[in-house]
Amino acid sequence: MLVGLILAEALKDIDPRSEMKLSDLLKKFYSEEGIQDTVNRVTFRACDRLSLYQPKSNLEIQAKSFAYYFNNKTSAGLYDANNVNSFNTLVSSAVAKMNNVVGEDLEEFNTVC
Image (cartoon, rainbow, N blue to C red):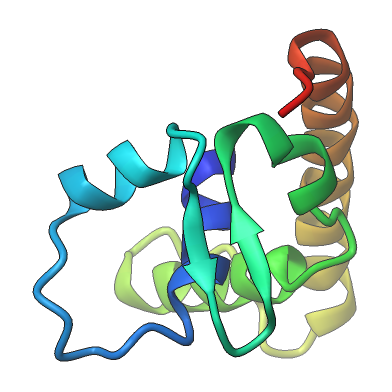
């Protein structure tokens, strides 16, 4: 999941007409070369995961967007339009817990490029 978030950030400025395949992107990400973002002058490499992952990034916004979408597309109906704050709190809590777990995992597997 974390690699997906980092790759999404890396790919946002890549030309959508690019014919690069997912397998090519993953090979580059896990190589010394990495994925070059020429707009922001950043290199995305697996060995830089700890510095590339920003817990305060748009993860929470993306999670809330997905949660609202999922809620509206299912019969579960967990989201009460009259109680947006409790729904936001639920998503924020889940993201915070994920950040704690990811942070601990990244420290354990952090490598030097």
